[in-house]
Length: 442
Image (cartoon, rainbow, N blue to C red; front, side, top):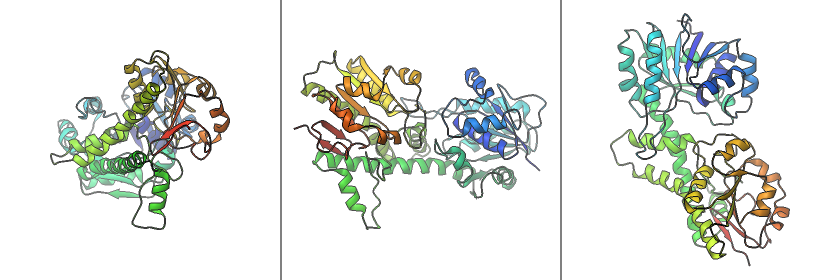
């Protein structure tokens, strides 16, 4: 069976980037997006998120090989359905919500015919594809093919990685795997077929939970060093130098660094989904997630302590936060799971009202949607009592930090979450900290 016509249900980050790349490869792609605002933007080749190269690719493929609708179109030949809807976790229970997947399957059932492939690409607990999705499809008839193929691209490099990363395929049966391979073989040189649906489901969860754990170890190391009056940057570089058995990640600084504030929708939820997939003790995974989430409390406590030490009343305190995208490199405007947004909530509960925000990619409107006033970095340095930098966008390297700190208030406090400025402010008489370093004003 040849696969040429693909229907992607859910045109968020996962669905839109895949749709664009498949359309570029010659597939006829129908993208389904129920959100009217997002759909209208897509019809204008304007994605509702920042992704390098995506607007240009959409412009080339829209109404050529890519067509977008608010529901699955009647009368169109469809060889494969790809489900790429959200699977959020409940904020209180940390349990995954599969309602969007249920709705997507219900939407496609009236269009499902024998011989078609249904591929699940959303991140799910292990066993979901076989035990939750398959029974719904079975009611429609026999000879329905099913696979689970996780999305593993990084925001900011998705179009590149869709064409270079190995694509994982978990299959209900051999023919399901063959059909899935026919799709991905057109866009990537490497395909990994696993032994089961469950094997593919857990791979995505393990990938992100492993990253989360490594970040947590780096952050824990940095906090320990800081508590002992040591510079974590110096310690980790020395520990790793020429010692093949050590690969400790750097935390809270850019050079060679990968850790620091850990945000984003995937790392925020995937360890919880992995933990919910098994009934064994998963204390290590939970502890790593709790530590990374706790970094927000650490910077908040340091800021609050500084205000108290300097006798700055909460009612008069001015807070400046830069870096509202959940990460700075590769750049994105995604605020889902943003450490900065969560930090704003802490300050609001404390009663601070004068908060200002900045980001190089996130629009001023979206920054202000978190409850702060947008302003420039220059204004932040002039007016704030506390300045906090929450991501590692490369443009921070271009700002004149030496000149800016000269304009800081004498009592101001600079928390540099990624130790971007540490080398440039040496000798400056300011209150400066990072996750792994403390420099007190003389």
